[in-house]
Structures are given as C-alpha cells and as structure tokens.
Image (cartoon, rainbow over all chains, first blue to last red; front, side, top):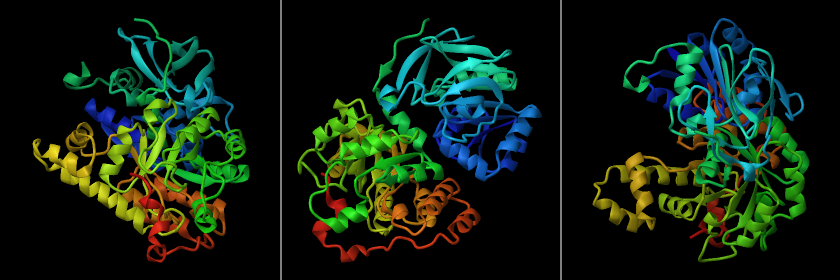
Length: 199
Length: 298
C-alpha cells in the first residue's frame, strides 16, 4: 500500500515522515502518473496559489479527480483543504480547486500571520484533545449534505469528511501526534495499520 | 477534553509558516504591480522593498526600512505572505513592520546595520523573523536570538551564485562535522562555532538545522535555484534576479518550476529556454571589501 503526498510545494516532507512513523509507504508525488500506484493522496499545507499553479502547469487536476473517482482517498491539510473544496471564498481571481468535497472554505480566514495560533481541539472519535496548529489558516464556512463535521474551534468547522475525502484546516504533520494520520489510514482509506504503531 | 483558547506567537506557529514556504520561491518586489506578477508566477511570499539589492548597491549611502506606504500597499494587494526588511539591530523598524501586519521580518544585511554589536532580540516579537547566515555558528546565534527561519546570505544584488554556494556548503559541512563528534567534544565545538551549546547539541543529534533554511544572494536563473535546492536548501529567495531581468513574469514562473522540479533536468532545461536577458552579474572580486553585504552581522 502506498500513500502519495503531493510534493510540489509546502510541508510535504513532514507528512511523509508522519506516514513512515506509522510504517506506511509514502511517495512524494511530483508527476501525475505517480498517482496510479497510490491508494490515498495527501495534499499538504503550503501556499494554495503556488500549489494550484504548479498543479495546473503539470496537469494534476483531471488525474486527481479521476483517481478519486476510482476510490483513491484524498486528505487536504490547510492549503490542501482549500484545494479539495467545491467553493473557495476569498481566493485569488480564477483560483481553481479540485471540487472533491461539498464544502466552502474561506482562505486566510483568521487574518495574517500575527493571527496564526495553536489550540486544543475536540476531534470526533479521539478520546483526548488534539493540538491544532493554525497557520494563516482557512476555515470551513459551510458544508453540504453528506459532509460529516469532525472538529470545530470557536464555532468554525476546522475538520470534516465526505466519503473518502478528509479536510483539516490545521497541521497534524507539525505536531508529531499521529492520531489524525492514523484516522486517515484506518477510517478514510480503510486499511488496517500493522505493528505496534497501529494500536 | 475540551477546546482551548487561541495561543498566538508560539515558536511552532512562527517556524510553522516557514515550513509552509518550503520548496517555494520568495521574490523581492518594490511595487504592487511586481507583487501581483510574483503571486501570479507562483511565488510563496514576496519581500516588500523600496529598492532591490542591486539598486541599493548602485545607489550607495544608507539603506533603511522601506517607506510604510510601500509595505502597506503590498500587504493589501496580494493574498500570499508579505515579508519586509529591517536593519540589523534596528528593533524600532521591526516594531513598525510588525504594526503594519507583515507576516515575516527579515533582519537583513542588505540594509545598512543600525547596531554593530547586537541583533534584534527577536524573542520579544509575535511576528516571526528570518535572518542571514554564512556558516553554522552564525545561523545558531540568530536562532538563539529567536529567528524562526534562516537563509544563507550569498552576496545580494550580484546575480552571482558563488557566495550562496559557498555559504550552504559551509553550513552543510559544519553540520556533518558536528554529527561525527563525541559528546564531550560538543562543548568545545560550541566554543569554536561561537554558538549556544544546547543548539550545537541538537544539531549534532539531528543532523540538520532546527529551522527552515532558504538560500539567498545571487540567484538569477532556474538552474541557480535548482543548484541551491540540490545542495540542500529548503527554498530560495530571489532578489534582483527577477525584476532586473528582461522578462520578469516568465523568469519568475521558470524559477518557481525549477525549484519544485529541482532534480529533473528535463524540466529545468525546458523552463530555461528563451527567458530573455538575465540580470547583468557582478564578479565578487570586483566588489570592494567594505561593500560586501555578507560581512554585515555578528
């Protein structure tokens, strides 16, 4: 089983380390053809404008949508949550998203870097609080039918799931806490982790 | 369990933004139009300036923080992060930049130093800082003062990558040297590097810097950017190299693509075609010692 991490720009290495810590094979995806071998894809945090331009230049939109249609699970963190949304609020002109999840995501929702923060979150299904790191983060402004809200902070939706697509507006890859990565592997991809790390 | 209040300005939040910039290109801009060109080309951030380093070098005199009007107009015109430079040690310029809402402050040797002994105490600020370095000791001194990101200095405004290469190789060699030392040798290494022991020990144990390191100072072509990435930088700053060239929009996009696909020679070759005139470079040996910006910083 291979899980891809879109490696065009941003914190892709941290996701790869997080997957490897769970004994999951990770692939840095720089070309669309690499998607064929992936059962899941993580779109990392970074600058959503930079990532979306590189995705367009290298023809990623249709292949990701097609592989997702064939069952590839997709998880967007921060910039990735913008790129997977059906609607982007406050994006740059012509900002294109993959439209995989029926949600509207507001870019830079909290403001500038001075407003970046961390806070404990209640994440559905986790017994202990999860430390959310929000960096020039978006929030999920509204969700359509069939979208399950997994976490809120100050009333705003910060994690949600629709079928085999997961969206978090914060950065689990920066915490060293593997629980959201484990959730993605076990619940969204639907694959059991091996070894003691999987417990 | 329950949710907690926002905690702002934490180290993880400061270093975290630098993590999000990795694999990207940060471009020097002096106008709103240039900032938009940079954003359209896929820059991950812009550095708002009054003059690019090549023009600062040409103009001579004292180079200071940009006019707040310029910084504010750029902050208001793009959705990507905006950085701005203050003089080394000039904590009031830093306070002003923080009040203008910039996302990162570069305490930069490109401007004329305001203090020849002390850098800004960056731990006092909620906004994160990036600082220049030529070697590991300098990087760790800046990190101990609170820098959440570093960049190797190179020689700004030259379009000549040789100093940028020298500095990343020096940092890498010194990291490799530390990882081979026994624990009792690290105390003496800290003395030699003139860096805090706890950071020296961390680098020796982890084999890398504790914060993101970009490359700056002399990058002018897609191949230069890919060279710095292959040498182990996390991303690149391009100062004069873009807007002092013949076709800034095209060159900016080409450098962005070369930074992403830095190990793919076919991509770098393709994006390097027909870029028009590169900026005219300067040989380092032609710059008098007193005008070498990299020597600034202590």
